[in-house]
Image (cartoon, rainbow over all chains, first blue to last red):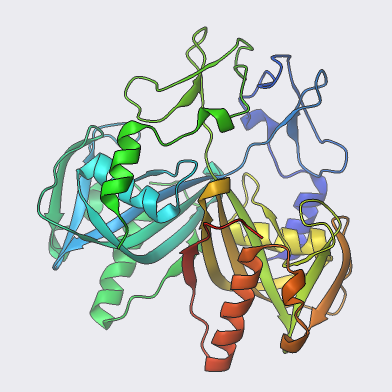
Length: 201
Length: 201
């Protein structure tokens, strides 16, 4: 069971670390901000004393997909930091005005030039130490026409026994692949929800 | 199937509406920003030409719970806008440095003074026209000690036939309740993933 008592104690004090905020100026009027708990709030915010505007900082959503062609899984080798050169599932920050599934499709297209059919939401992991929520979809490649996008060194389809477990970029990727392979053995795909508290890699 | 072709076309043009951005100044150096597509990007961003800082705007996550005590469901009547006076499940914006489940517990405590045990992630809805993702958990009340928090006029446990369907605050709440009641009849709770494109209410 989750420890509501500890969480309440944290919320009652102050859960945010203003030291982690990079906000120095009001993005509405340009005046310097102060980091303080506004009246009626319980969290530290970047508050503008000049125009009263508050800049909220909230978790970001990362969307991606585990796309298959038959038995094989689409992996990308990263051409960007962090984790340059390591293998990942196509994924990236969800954008405004799109759905999570559209974001996952867009990332497959951008990173792997792959057109995919989204099957279902598959894993959802909170990663609180970096204030992210990762949502990975099961997907199916629509054709063989894929390749490295700008953010990938190479893209390939791998069988289960070809997955480079010691060269995976992120814990989310490893846990999603493990869960998928277990489910595939059982013949049933069950969405998994969880959290990743250790370092991401 | 999702229409990747249309989405690709949109991404290739520019998906964001800069008119919807309220960012006028750089929050790193205080200079005015311009809304433009940075080099290597495909989206409009608030870019600072003085210090090169980019302010990204991304979807926000709303976390909440459908908490039960036996057969009854915990509902809150909103004491704040939007939807003042209408009924909702306890929910609110996820905060940095917490997990989605912790956020759902926190909202139950803040809005309904309720201590809950989180069972599982239950519904996930993208709401693209307001750039939000709503994650609702199934939960269980830990005791009878609950009541209206600052953002609620009243909080109560209702049976299925007492749900005020015409007085619900949000589509997400209605669809989560409908899904829950159907699942409960079948005796199995299956996570649901979807999107809400119509007006939220």
